[in-house]
Image 1 (spheres, rainbow, N blue to C red):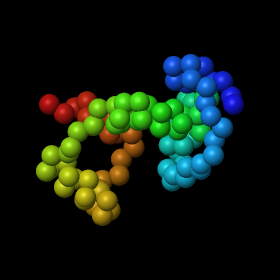
Image 2: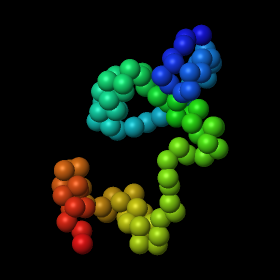
Image 3: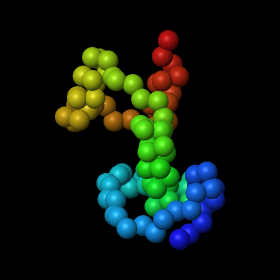
Length: 99
């Protein structure tokens, strides 16, 4: 067993015996791994930490909301490929300008 004290309440992590596979955008993966390295975590440790928090909190470890009708329509439109593609900077600029 490996002691990763900073992960979750000084809990010793058990030897991993299951594999989790997920597909994420390459840029998202790279960006997240840069941040994880800076805080001293591997991707596997971060996923394990997320799972541990889900089980401790009996739900997602962050606030979630059920989208309203307009948001659901927008999500469905984007899933169908009808969305506008903008960079994160452009999106952030648009959000800041909403009144």
